[in-house]
Length: 432
Image (cartoon, rainbow, N blue to C red; front, top):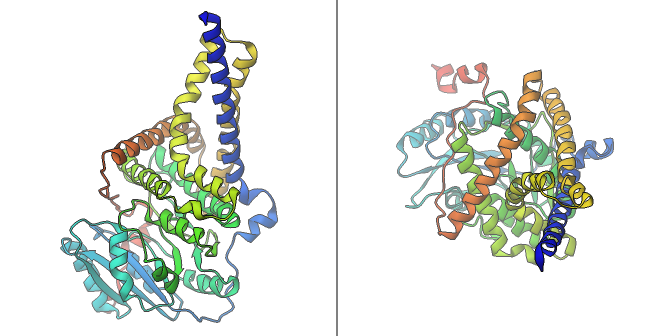
């Protein structure tokens, strides 16, 4: 074809990729903004006020592995719930005596706490929860993580949500809090803010939702009907949401900054990389299982396909956007094609503006002091964070192809707790 023919093909390819990236980024940004589009939509995303009637009982699952540093605090917070009818089932491994000791001491102090031992040789979160499912006596099963800081009135709000909406599943909000711990923790916190505050509401509205990892409440009979969680999936929460959506179960999402479950970000970049690798690999597993193909609507199936492949699209865009910009600047391509290569950068700039506004809103809602340096870290850290996400996506594909699906545990140290939380005495100490 000659040099001009090669240049033409290259230009057409660059233009096509640039337009695809532009629309992908535009749709993602639009979905992120879902809750903020109108005051009415924003108001509709919150829990309704409880009417005082409590008709449901709860079994709260608390899987804990090597979580002795934070487990007791979480149990104590759950025991402060204002709801009248609930039990806490702590699931510990047979090979984790330190965590088991903390759980058993809590059970000895309060009869609402029970301990179930997971004897699986190869351990992970879904296997632990499936081990506990036969012991659940409540109408609703709720899932929390061992480092969670749970609001005392949450169960009352969830009870009301189930009764007034006819939901099969209620997804509450989860929020990472320690935005000041590192440059990446700031972006990590903001991701959770956009996901739980806005994006999940759009998914619930469309009838396809990958559930969040905790503060998820499922009617016990519904959970048993689908045989609980997939024991081999690294994103068991996403998988459960996809399977329930695919059979038409009703999922209600509610977010209220007063009611969110507070958590901490991973304590190191390597820990964050491993966590994101696990999630990405789990999304890939869910995609390959193809339960989402049972969704009745074409729009639902397209949303499912896009959502489950998002981590890998992120990895692709993280490489292609700077490559496109370099081609436009240093190669002799037509002016129109050069202009198209910069379209993804336009949406990236708009996204940065939205993130700055979102960080301000995040600080305002949670009473956190956001300084000028935090806005600088947010913007400067953006490209580096994208590189990390791309690396996690590539690593997830590599692990999946090699058949490595071991659970890489994220350790927790309580970085999201305040000084008052850390020194809060247990009931045993108070009694003494």
